[in-house]
Amino acid sequence: MVAKHKQACSIAGFLNIFGDAWTFLIIREAFYGTTRFSDFQRHTGAAKNLLSERLSMLVENGILEKVNVGTMGARYAYHITDKGRSLQPLLAAIILWSNDNLYPEGQEPNLVVNRETGEPVREFDLHLKGLPEGDLQKFAVVAGPGASDAARERLGTIAR
Image 1 (tube, one colour):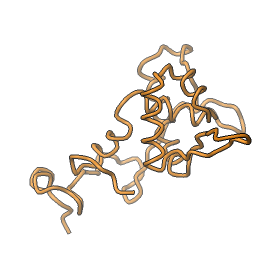
Image 2 (cartoon, rainbow, N blue to C red):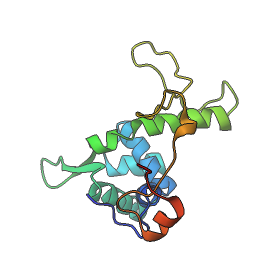
Image 3 (cartoon, helix red, strand yellow):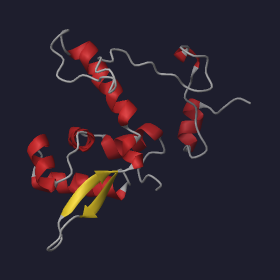
Image 4 (cartoon, one colour):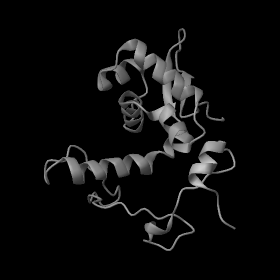
């Protein structure tokens, strides 16, 4: 699906989907195994109309899939798709950043752990393929093929 947004910008495209707290809370719940509308509402505290709108948008963007699970009439569950699961490293990084910067040690509300050992993961090592490992200072953001003329002027393009 091609993102529909006013700005030709990768960050703006992401924020058009995930730019409010409710959407990330819904994604959090999907990762925690929540599938039913009523459970999403209970766990996030979102109003029904807002939750319905966000779930529909996540389905429309292929992040969640709406599945009829009713045996005697329509009843729906929301399952996370592969596209949605690709957000997992981002969510882990957000948890780790929050734990390091918002909560005192020993008071973290969530932990990222190794499934096999149960040991907490305390650091997130971001590595961008194509850059020397650990050298994030060598990356830049430039205008891509779908950029607006204003973005091309502001950001430049890849020098080849």
